[in-house]
Length: 357
Image (cartoon, rainbow, N blue to C red; front, side):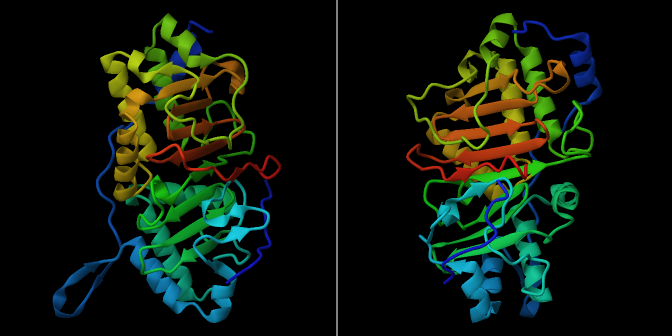
């Protein structure tokens, strides 16, 4: 197994202005309901029987193609601890390679590169394929370029995990091997649209519509609710998405203090956040959230700090419960840090690279 890895991280207003409301109006109506179950890669077996290949089965297929040299570079024991980055399979960063080889390189064969792409496609929703590809094109030059993988444990058993890591992406596939957590552990998705310092309307950013939906909820609030929801001074560092537990103190307005129509919109925002991912991960998030009291156990906060254009359209916001954090940082471009579990006892292992953004 690999013992050391190079390539470490490159690291109240009680009014909405006419400009803000007009911007939101022009943004249009979003499709706020979750799409259907993702299509998975398929193969036709003998006798015309169609077998469905999940990302997990593809990880096993990929693993079986590795040479010993490849296993030494990208495969690790389940509880491997990196000297600099801790328990490696739980690591979360915004700009990193978890192992040295890039997917699009001579290190992996064409067949292996195709399998890795299949795993990625299976972890995400097919309706989002073009948007994921746009993000990857803008941020790393296309799928597989400056992207890395790692495999932990033994694929094909009940304890393994596949991690895909690069600038602006940390995604996982574990077949529910990692206890208590959704997505196999904390994840990150992000996008630099037209520029590293995006304009206030974030042109070309494939995730910005999520913030527009959340801001529409803010516009539904009355004066008292806006005072609760808006944090006027400071905001947490983006990588701080550890759990506070049921006795934690949270920023923002409790969902329990929202009206019925506001709660309905809050639910639609959650569906929109889950939309880029496969159905099994959506279901796991729902299950984890339910164990802690559902959305009613959460708070929603908007941060005045970092308001691009000072337009009252809040670029930074956070939905948080006892063991649920979805932190949308929209300045200077979009980073979204996600940590969801069914218990608050899970430790966070995260790092934010402010140089590589």
